Length: 413
Image (cartoon, rainbow, N blue to C red; front, side, top):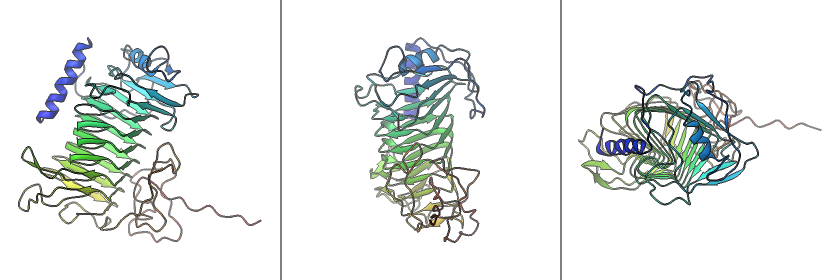
């Protein structure tokens, strides 16, 4: 564990002690099993106030007192279906001390806005440091958070994390993970969009020693000053399936703490295994200008993917646009040196914004579902688009977070 991770863990532990809470449990649990039961009657959020009865803050406080909650039977927080708008937070939300499942009404309906909070409040808005617990957040937008260390909006240490159909925008984690920081956890991210998030490492996500699985998600316009414009992983595993990573950036040039920096405009990994299945990593930029021809970290700007010391890459049915010559682990089914020609980040249907490819894009009918049945919008996977030849080995799936649906037939009258 490096200095920044040790410092962050210590801060989290001290915050827990100040709150009068003692974390228990053994090792972090794995992924939450399907068919989750609920530990008690759902706690309902009935208004968009920052605090008081019916607020999200009050609901989390109530959930934290549910000692019967477990990862497979968490305390459940739901929102009134009538709610639409912004919860303008004035201070950090309570940390999760028990397993909690927060089910929002939809990322397009309710936003947790941290823009009115004091800068560098010292504690992220949603965090969990208790081994053996699991935090789940779905159907919310989380915007404008700033934290002085790691995890602008979500910071999870030792516990498990699930994010589903959420949007993170304009969040800053400073040190690592503009939107999300995870440390030695099992992490599942599905159907989420990250845009304009910023940090030193991992503009959107910084995963340290974690088992991280991301599917049907989009990362656009995120920025890191040192490495991993969208995602940074140090140790553990990082697996992307049906994911789009585009137009992210890294700006630093030279070395930082004796290590090359400014690499991996889209994704950067060190001492970690990276798997890219049916995913796009394209159009990213990196300003690293120190070349290490004989260095174990290799030597290229690696605008899209940077695989560092002790790390490995396995890619199948994926598109990597730039700086792939020194990458090991590519497959004949991968598409290299081509632009996916993606459209703008916008509402293309579903709960979160996406970038949709046109019918002429090289990603059409060039991928493989790898078990996915729907795309980020909830539209069917394995749709062989008419008039486009299937790439060898493809099952008709499109590469990336969006599956282009067949045009509807026009009926003659």
